[in-house]
Amino acid sequence: MLLQLLSLSVVFISGISAEYKNYDGFKILEVNFQNPRVRKYIQEIDKNLGFMPDFLGENWKQKQAHYFIDKDSVENVKTNLASNNITYQMRDVNPQIFKVRRRRDINGAITINDVNNRYLSYDEQMQFLNSIAQQYPNDVKLQKIGNSYEGRSLNAVRIGDDGSSKPIVWIDAGVHAREWISYNVALYLVYTIVSQPAYRDLLNAVQLVVVPNTNPDGYEYSRTNDRMWRKTRSRFSNGRCSGADANRNYPFFWGTQGVSHSQCSEIYCGSRPQSEPEVMALTNAIQREETRIKGYIALHSYGQEILYPWGHTMRTYPSDVQDLIQVGKAMAAAIRAVNNTDYNVVNSGDGLYPAAGASDDWAKSRGIKYSYTIELSPIDDYTGFSLPEDRINQVCREAFQAIQVLMIEVRSKFSIRQTTSSASSTSAQSSLLLKRMRTAVRGSGRG
Image (tube, rainbow, N blue to C red; front, side, top):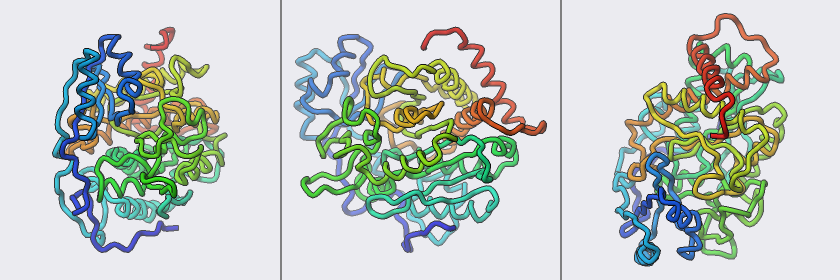
């Protein structure tokens, strides 16, 4: 069944509308936290400042934390940092975020070339998925799993769904609207794994489910109104602010640490667990077949990290944490092999602060063996969410290799089918890489 497209004749793909939010006077705050005293300050920055600034990401190589400071708070933040003897840098927002780019007629075909070279609208994403389903009807099934708050379809792409009980790897993307590269990675994954015969053997043993856009309302709003929009677009009758952070809205230690109960906060966890229809749809869909789902990845940006549970608190880990670390390091090695890009494998709660109610924690709590969040490239705060379009393909290729490693691990651990002897050289290389990583980390500490 084809996905419905909105009847728009011209799509505004990344230009600036008359109502696009102006960020004049806003600043990027960068704090180096190598010093333990500064790290403690950063971990309690909400208490120190009296509010939680918008946390953009972390440069783990240089031990830097990045925040987005609104213009009305800049001077107060500077004063607080100075009084606490905290060295910092403040910079203007990268103007590339608001660069006017081309428009496109939606009547034109959307191809993998588009995915590799520009950021698509929601409608274009759905058109691309429709074309793949038409081209590969025996391999791809499109499934509507729910609606967003504004009524857009939440669609899952089921690849290799042959009616058997083979294990599933579940990938979803874009829960945070401004993290545009995550959507392209998911679309690239769908096209590449189904269009290249090299992966047929893997799909015979493991089913892949991909939800390329889990927050379509927020995504479109970030394209047409506010490039830095993060949350959903749900409305509240008793407040002036909109949306919740869907990655604080999952029903596992909901509302405890690393969240806000203020509707205007970027990390507002919602009025209750699963208050956001997008989260309700995703959790319902996963629970319907959770006994078969053995791998889960939530695609985010930015920071070049592979995060594993638990993230709702610090220094607390699942009993099989070593397995998570081993496969995580194998995924990082696969990424590095593409273009020498380094990803850090780390527990999500042991970073600068825990975050409760996240999807990877919830997935792990449901018994999904391998559960991760991948913070995609870049690592620097200047590029941040505005990853240049000429870097899209590289990031897609890197993430694809990491996901393939997870699928191979799931196949080796859980597949009920024998794979053919004519496995692809690509899959064979990833299998060898996985074995090498297991050997390298065997007997090591938590890391």
